[in-house]
Amino acid sequence: MHAIELRAEVRKDMSKGGAGRLRRSGLVPGVLYGREAGNISLVIPVKDLERVLDTAGQSALVKVLLGSGDRPEEYTSLVREVQRHPLRREPVHVDLYQVSMEQRLQTVVPVELVGEAPGVKNGGILQHGVREIEVECLPADIPEALKADVSGLEIGDKLTIGDILPPPGVKIVSDGDGLVVTIVSPRLAVEEEPGVEEPGEPEEIKKANEEEGEEE
Image 1 (cartoon, rainbow, N blue to C red):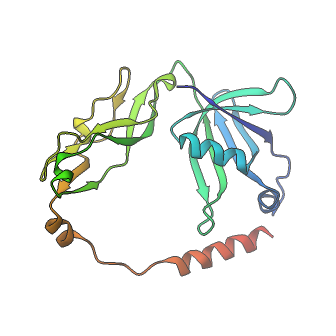
Image 2: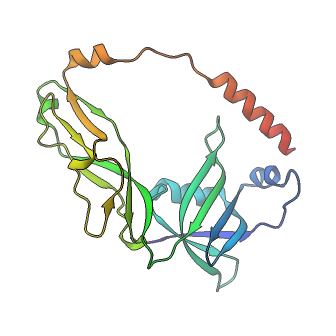
Image 3: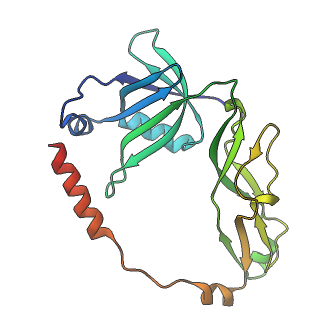
């Protein structure tokens, strides 16, 4: 897997309220950690981080270029966690984990549905369950996605994690019984549709306002 480059700088403002000032100036605070990197606080332009996340999500290798100039320090990493603002959904903090290219690791990759299910052509409804699968492999072997072929599914058929064939060098860690896709009749789909819950947005708004107030 090709590593996507991401420019970053060492974070210097560690004062109270510093994170809020960084975000208002278009920077996302974060941390890079690993055996060689140790624990480095850094800042990343929000547009650059969003570009990486939009391009490859959190399963792609990221080459962190730390520092300005022609010879920045390089750290091959994975995005371990992205915290987002509950309302605006923009990233507000990121954790990056430096990997060893010679050591197997566990990470999650998305599921990509391929093919067209005959059951859907005959009026069935495709229900997509598991959307991410945990795998174990060398960093260079991390697949962009695991392909789930639905071209043989009729109404009533299902496809589980155990039915997916991983590429060479990749081991699936997730439970093989996890349901990825099922094709149901329209009648069953209506009967199984859950009730609508009241949205929890007011509580999220309150929490977001409290957090932003603490950063001032």
